[in-house]
Image (cartoon, rainbow, N blue to C red; front, side, top):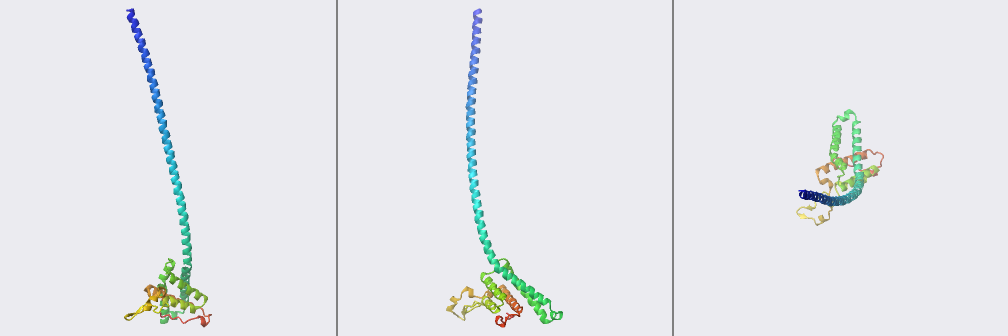
Amino acid sequence: ISNTKKKKNIMDALKKVISSKREELCGRRWVRQSEVLSARKRKIEEEKKEDIIEEDEKKEEETKKKVTKFVKKNHDDSEKLSKSSEKIEEMNEENILIRDWIKELLKKWETKLDEREESIKNSAIGKVESRTLDQCREHLKPLLKLCKKNALDIGMRNGLATIIQHANDGNFIKAHDHYILIAIGNAAWPIGVTSVGIHTRKAREQVEQKNVAHVMNNEMQRKFLTSFKRLLRFAQDLRPDLPPSQKVNIGTSS
C-alpha cells in the first residue's frame, strides 16, 4: 500500500510538472504569436500611413498644378479682357459721339418747336414740322440702338463720325460730301446696279463693296440716313455765324 501511495504521489507530481510546463509553453507560444501579430499589425499600419502620406502628397501636387493652371488661365483671361475692353472703348468713342450728337440735336429741335407761338403750332406748316421731328426721332431709334450695342457697321460708323466732326467744325460742305459717300457712294453705279439692259457691263467687277450705297441695303438704314440728313440741315441752320462758303443747300425731301 505504501508503495502504491508513493507511486501515486509521484504520478501526481509528474502530472503537475507536465501541466505546469505545458502551461508555460502555451504561454510562451501565445506571447510569441501575440508579438508576431503585433509586429504584423504595426507593419501594416506603417504601410498604410506611408500610402496615406504618399496619396496626400500626390493630391497636394495635383492641387498645386490646378491652382497654377487656374491662376495662369485667369491671368490670360484678364489680359484678353483688358484688350477686349480697350477695343470696346475705342469703338465706343465714335458710337458715343454719334449717339450724343443725335440726341442733342433732337433736343434742340424739340425746344425750338416748343418755342413757337400757338398759332404757328396749330397751322398746317407747324403740324408738318412737328410730324417731321417725330418721324426723325422714330427713324433714328434703330441707329441709336446700334450705337449703344456697338453693333453699327464700321464703315457706316466711321462715315457718320466724320460727318459729325466736320459739322462740329462748321464745315458743312465736307460734311455733306461725306454724307453723299455713305448714302450714294462714289462708284459708276452707286445704288448697287451693276448691269444695264440685257448686257452686263464688264466694269461691274471694278465696283467695290465700299462704293455700294449703304442707304440701299435695307429700309431701316434708308430711313435713319434720311433722318440723319435732316439733322445735318438743322445743325447748319443753328450756325448763322458761318460764311456761305462753308454751307450747302441740304434738301429735306430725300
